[in-house]
Image (cartoon, rainbow, N blue to C red):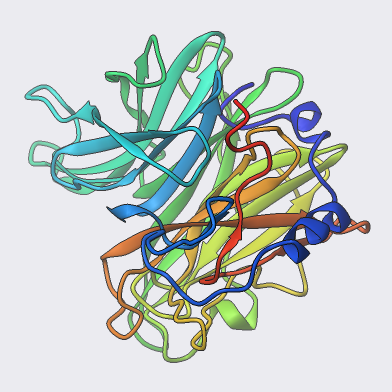
Length: 362
């Protein structure tokens, strides 16, 4: 299984009906924080992980263990956690640490892991100021390791340098072995007022992962009304994650500014990895829920339950919904695929939910 599952790997996932039955079996209960206070050992409550704070969480499963990383130490690198069930996380230390020879100097953001040809990779974005060239900005970088826990060392930094700032790198490996890189091109727009701007691009990679095999193409940008609120600080599509079911490709993405309560997740579909991508008319997939106390749910990754029968989104939300900002928690909820192919998240939740199917049986 690669870090980004191909179509065959997703084929065994549960349908909306079977997951709904599992949800009906959940015991009712009140809210709990950081998975504390669960009376039932067969349930979990968001946020998961005792005191676990990070932005842009990415979770993947290799050889019976989940690995979690995200934006944790923006000036130093990326920490890693492991879990048997997506709920109980154990710190493993740093997977990647900036060194004297590192290209990136600051703003180490949004790392993701993937496996390709029996080697493990970490793709991330970082920032530096190149005094000689007179330019500054974010670029996508690539590090590698012989095992999923690392340590990872740079192999291509920068890896993707299209001549403009780009963040939120994501690699999808298709069923035929072809690898694709997705990222957000970032900048600003000045009309009608100054706002951040981000558009998701994609490009096929060379077979040896030495770089792009062509020119990036536009996949999505902020076009739907929920993505362009007049009071918002940005017109952004960012944080892409791609997976395949049958002949249909799905891309989840986030929109709006991460520090705003209406930061959320949408999705688009395509018939080929580079599109054209069509956004779901019933977006967003995840949005704030004031009654439940959920603010700014976004930047998700998608993974399977321990037995492979369910799909889960792993996403961050503001640690304090009354003061949204950079402190964010890790949350998981079920991702359902309707019979017509539409996606639905059973969440965001703050009440006890059944553990991911297969938890405790490994």
